[in-house]
Length: 191
Ligand code: AMP
Image (cartoon, rainbow, N blue to C red; front, top):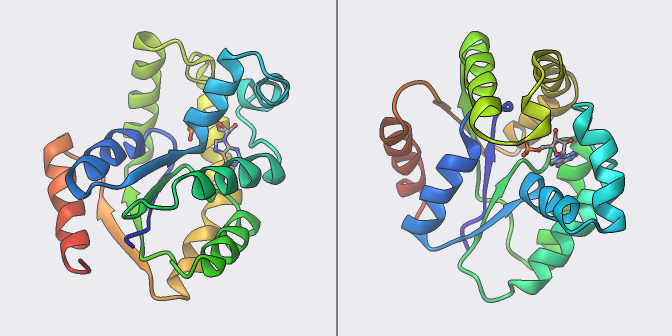
């Protein structure tokens, strides 16, 4: 199996690139952000709880996303692999994910980190707030807060996978197709 973590700050292009990766390599896309937004749309108890954190730009509690991911991994037993998008975002989530995958004898293959300049991230998210109805992209303070959360709480996940020799960094600047080409080059070295 090919299990890829697509990593990077909000606005790095993880969702866009995940979509292209799953189509080309026939993998399953697991985005915790998408799962939480769909729970919010369904007005489920989980969605209502998640919304409180998401609207403020904070991370939802670890157990919430770990349970969501565990159920999706179980439901997709016959896939060729997963692209994890927006998960893991804490070292605890990373350790739990490793344990889940260990039990299924299908470890993380690579973590691909998309590197994008701070000013470019802000510009992309402000623009996304104008064209999409994501409440967490509407307010520039919330956007900056999410990038702070990424730097403080999520970046240590890079070191966690670097220690396993699985970290690959790519520039997330340029056109969607240029960035995708860089990503494919990395994936093609392991498939
Ligand atoms: P995203 O679409 O990945 O940018 O996620 C949007 C929001 O959902 C984040 O700002 C968090 O509030 C929440 N979220 C998504 N994934 C996670 C995660 N792995 N851990 C904690 N919170 C998450």
